[in-house]
Amino acid sequence: MLCQACQQRLATVHLSTLFPVEGLGEEPETERKQHLCEECADAYFASTPGMNSARGLICLSDSYRSKLYDLLEAVHPEAFDNTDSEACRRASKLMQDFLRLHLKKDNIEMNEDAFQMLCQDFFCSHHFYTRIDEHKKRKP
Image (cartoon, rainbow, N blue to C red; front, side, top):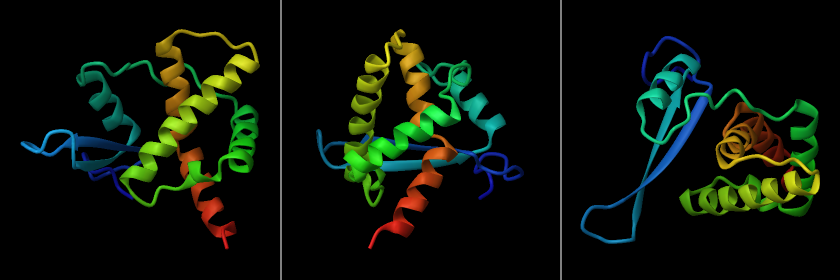
C-alpha cells in the first residue's frame, strides 16, 4: 500500500483515530484511518500536538515482542480482532494493560512517554499487523 500523503513510498505506519460525530455527544464515533510512510509519519507526528517525535527511540526487542505476542494470543486471542472500531478499541485497551503488566513483572520501569513508545512498537507496527494476518489464517 502506498503512503496516502506522498503517494510515492510504501506505507509502514498505520493510524486509526476515532472522532465523535458533531452534535451527537459521546456517540457514535467516526473512524479515520491513515496509512503513511516513515518520512510522512515523522512529519505528521512532529506537527501534531501531544505526539512524541522521538517515538522510535525505544522499542521492544524482536524476541521479547514475539514472546509477548505468543502469550497474548494464548491468553487473549481477542486482542487480534480488528473487525470493527469497537473491537479495535477493546483490543487496544487490553494490549496496553497486558503490556504494562508484563513490563512490571519483568521489572522494567519507565515513564509514560517511554511506555507510549513501547505501545506504538507493540501494537501499531508492522509486526502486529503481520501477527494479525497469521492469527486470521489459523482461526477456524
